[in-house]
Image (cartoon, rainbow, N blue to C red; front, side, top):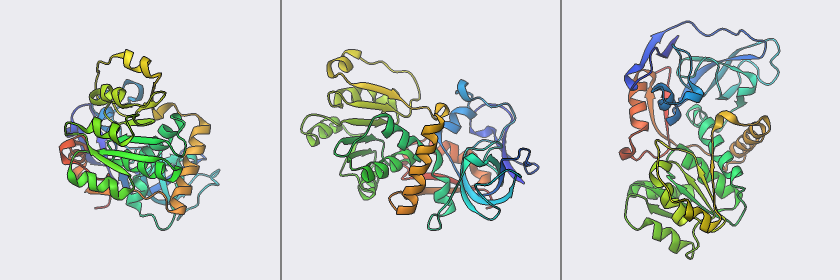
Length: 325
């Protein structure tokens, strides 16, 4: 099969397309999936660059934990899925940047018929991150949420979950197209975070009180601004941070506000079960619909890694790899 292999940590050029053997079923609960689409996430660029000590794989490795496809083989103890089932992948033993991937049966979930494989590949990390973030913030109907970066994969998922939960949603984007996009997704109000004055716009929209919850995708740039905006007793959830920053903790103290971080590597079993029940239910009832921004053949994985980190492109939705193109 064709797969991406990383033989050394470094920039995007270390993503090499190679021919390797199909990963075997080695455990009784293993599931082999023919991968039709692969979700690309920023965390995979950090791991590839050797910048995530808590999640460093042994070399060589195939990246990816997100995907969707068709079950082609199962271990003798598997009861959750059968050969021929359409599934989305939420964790992989062998990596999903490949034509075939092996997962434990606890890492594959049914993909309802209206959802495409490309949409299925956009589910795992973005929608799990969004749901866990809102849960950690104890989001309640009627509260106001500011999604600071609403046009990417996690932003899309956050807006959809929040609207389904009954929150009032403000979302930011960096282009006029992005602003229109988040409004189409369901945001009640949109601001351009590249323009001066967006903080005041958020405050004005909330009657000077600020949002109850802020989901932050780039805390190294925006955390100080978030602390200025947050409602007294509000919660800032840090989803992404690409470097250190400096804040005045007195602002946090003055508002009795809270900053929480989200790292998917340390979820409890209960959180995982609750999260995927919510995702599958949302797919079935139509409240969750992943949006695909762009697809790439597996050969172009390096370019996809460059693009996902280039904020100037203003991606509207999820970036996807197609292993069979």
